[in-house]
Each structure stands twice: as structure tokens, then as C-alpha cells.
Image (cartoon, rainbow, N blue to C red; front, side, top):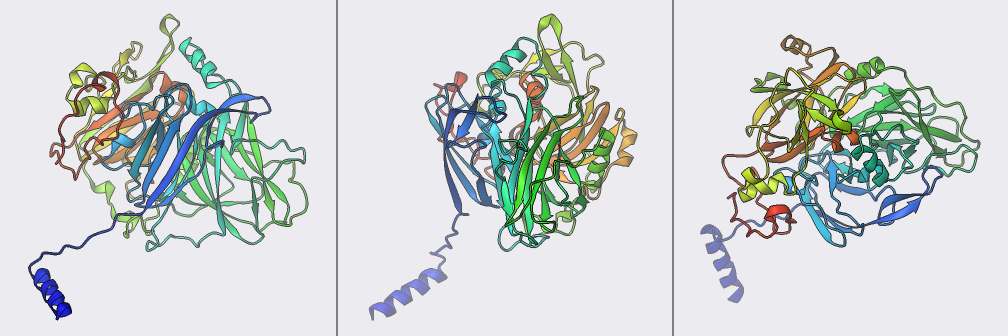
Length: 553
């Protein structure tokens, strides 16, 4: 009778709608980081580097699309630090972006826990410190985001996969480099190029970066984590099949070498089908008078014989690199992080609502070096702009739109201060980036991916739109701009928050070549943005202010 009564009550409640389906959260991935200084000799000279859990580069962050990541950072340095996760969009959650305009730095001797979901993304990314010039001392590491099991990937599973963090490197400390910039000097040429924190000497004593099995295919995840130089990446005698770039599956072309600009990441497949022995992986600087080379060893299992000292040649000039950019195409039939083809989003059919044209400049007045965008050189206020918005005290911290949408007639005069551009939520925007200088630029936009529809020499004008790739341009988060050239990107600003648009050239960013984009939803809805998390750090003028009631409902 008791069982019958329970069943009867259950059926009555079910018919009455008294039960609801409980949906489980997406899986969690947990990490704990101890951030310390240590002494290493990446180029044979002892120097101070930033370690995470005693490692340089830092440990792998590994998960799948829609996973929740919880990273508890213990700052054991003597100065504040922040980490950003380059390429991770932090949907509705710029509170976790790790840039000084959105988040207070982690004070020395304390900890902070990042908590974010990598929503509907796959690909190869990396993390690094955004404070001061800490990136010049390390603190960077790889991020792998896999497709969910039910989402097909447009290539067979590899035997294994390896991370290659390539970057230029200075033997001077980050503090010394910072003093150079503060005194009006450049940081100069790098002393070397590192691959995973080291560079092979070629003396027969080098340990391999990785060991591979003959006949097997491997996935190489490559990121330029350096601070200034574009690099060319190549594997001795082994062609590479490009399969992914900054979160997008690509048309799978073969390349002997690939230019990887500062802040950019890509994924290639490499088949171990050559004579079993050692081979060099090479990364060398591009577009510089003096070419600096870094190399590492890939060793065949049971292979015999050293790597040949004859390194594969690098391309010359930026026209080659421009043509390579034009060969990169979105794979329209591959599934995205969601179960729909990448090409189902017809970005080329959306009317442009606003055009923002950006030109950077440099000022050396009165012995002071500053970089600017449209005449404004960004300076971080003590109170992050995102906190100022939430607390309703914007007028005490910064002004919106001090930078015009079009560059002024003269860029000689530079204004210093917070550079915040307000863009309407869900507006489809065209951003033109012009480079009037003689060096290659690389830019990153946090919180979004955009369509890099064109890069061309000369100056931009409206009639150049006829040359845009409006069908299968890659959806990505960085774009390079060659000397005396321009780049065009298109995107919908549908991720509410405060997002950093920055030069990836560290000295330019540090000296003001960056801005923030404030993208606010008028609906004040949790569907668009999260409220201030309880655990967010407070600093500046909001440090002792009472927390406002929730803004979004």
C-alpha cells in the first residue's frame, strides 16, 4: 500500500507540474597557480623570470567547449599582477578578462580566483600577464579548448598534440625594459628567440622538445607569445597542414612555413614520414634588419642521427606574408563549436551601421615617448573603467569617446588619458586600422572574434570595400597590419562588457597604443551581462564604497 500511495502521489504531482527537470551544469576544470620569481638561463645568461607552479612557460590549461574554468592565482611576486586569457571571449563576463580596464590587479601576497566559462569556442590560445611589462619575463602558457564529443572535427584524431610557444626574448629584466620606456627609449632588438622557454644550441647535447613515432600524424599548436617580433615557424623537411587559427577551422592548405605575428595562434598537422632521426623546429624573426633564430629538436622514436645544420630558409619581405594571409580561408562546411557549420553565419550580408577608422602615431616630445590611436594615448586610471560604470561614477574616472571615429587631420598632438569608445550593443561595425609606420603592427580585441576581411597596401577609402572577402574570411581575434598598409575587420558587438583593443607590441601597448570598448546593454538583462561577482577585487575610489544593488535582472 505504501508503494502504491507513493506512486499515486508522484503521478498527481507530475500532472500538476510540481516537479521540474534539474539540468546539470557544464563540467568544471580546476587549477591552482603559484606565481613566483625564479632564476633561469633561457639564452645562457642567468635572469629573473616569472614562474607558475615552478614552470617556465607556465602549465597547460586544458578543457572542452562550454567547460567552466576555475583558476586560483596566488601572487607571490612583489608587485600586483593580472592574467588575461588571449582569445577567450568571456561571454557576458568582462569581469574575468584580466585587463586593467576591467579588473583590479591581484595585490602581492594575496590570491584571486578566476571563474569563467569558455562558451561555444574551440581552438588554440594562450594566457599571459597584462600588468606592467611582466610578459617580457614569462608568466605565459598554453590553452587548449577541444570540441565537445558530439561535434565532429574536420580531420582524424592525431597520435598526440604538442604546444609550441614561440617568442622573441630579452636577457634584460622586465623592470629594466620598463625603465627604458619610461625614460623615452625603445627596448631595442631581442637577444634571442625561444621555443617553449629554450633554444637549442646545436652542439649534439640538446634534449628534444618532443618525441614522435614514424608514420604517425601529430597536432602542433603554435602561439607567438613574444613582445615585439613577428616570427616565421617551420619544421625541417616536414610540410604543415593548417587546420585551425584562433578558434576557427580553416581550409586545409599545406605550408612549408607560416608567419605567426605577435599574439597570434594556429594549429597544424604534421606527419612523421621522413627518415627517422632528429629534425629542427625553427622560429626566426621577420621584417627586421638582423634575423634572430630560435630552434628546437623533434626526435623520431628509435631514430638515429642528428638534425642537419642546414636550416630551412625563411621567406623575405612582407609581400610574401600578405599573400599568405590571403590564402587563409574559413572552412564553411566544418562544424563550429556548436552543431552548425561555420559558414551558416552570413556576415557579408549585414549592413554596416558604423565605421571606425584608427591610425596610430608616436610622440617624442620633451624626451617622453608615447604611442597613441587617433591622437589619444591611453592611460589606465586607478579605478578600472568597468567598475566605474557599475558603481555609477564614470564622471569621476573617465570620459567616453575622447577619441573620434576618424583620425584627426594632424596626429602630432597627443592627449593622454583613459581611451574608451562607446559602441551600441549589437551594432555591426567596420573597423579600419591604418599603419603609417615602417614596422608591422599586430592588434588584438578581447571579448570577440571578428572577420578579417582585407589587408592591403596604401590608405583605405570607401571604394576599397569592393575588395573585401565577404564569404569566407577567418573569424579570429588578432590582425596584423603591414607597413604603409591597412586592415579591415567586421563584427557584431553583441558581448556586453568593457573590452580591450590593444597593440600586441608590448612597448606600444605599455606607452598608450590601446583603447577600451564599452558595450552596454540597455535592457539591463542577465541574458546580456552578468552582475558584479561577489569575489571581484575592489580598488581605486570604489574600494571602500558599498556595493550597488544588482544592475542586471
